[in-house]
Amino acid sequence: MKSQLGREVVKKQMPLLPIIKVPDPVLRQKAAPVTEIDAAVRQQLDDMAETMYEAPGIGLAANQVNSLVRLVVMDCAADEEQARLLQMVNPEIITVSEESARLEEGCLSIPGFTAEVDRPAEVTARWLDPQGAQQEAAFSGLEAACIQHEIDHLNGVLFIDHLSRLKRDMIWRKVLKEARSNGD
Ligand code: NI
Image 1 (tube, rainbow, N blue to C red):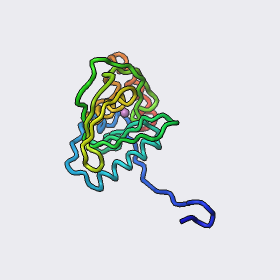
Image 2: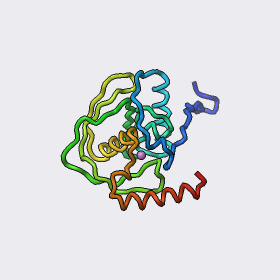
Image 3: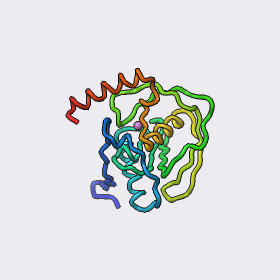
Image 4: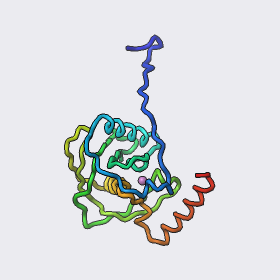
């Protein structure tokens, strides 16, 4: 029903979750598999999606919102494209291509830093959707990098771990310096 102002004033309120930043140890822990997909899990997936869009980001793993369960949301659609939200429970990579690709990556948990990362160019992944149905799909391009990046998070791995030691140490020193100066 419309208000007398002639427009809908109802806005769905979903809480945004705080995004955990390095060097918080939760980003280095392994998330546990979800054993039952209930209303709380679906709510968390919705809250994570809202948080990702607001950031803005193209992927978010549960570790990044201080929750050690295997949940990932992603949407790699370009601005002009229709949203392509994936909400994944217990996602896993089941095949990887021999061919690799190098793409620029950044991370909401390591703000201000990007680097080119080599990963398999194409992957097949399997997961459960919010209704508990098993899904399987092939990913390439940005989506392939994104899903690998997010599943890495569930295993306590960050994109900087894929860089040379020299590069990783350089970024890490700057990250720690910035975290200290922000009083974290
Ligand atoms: Ni990330």
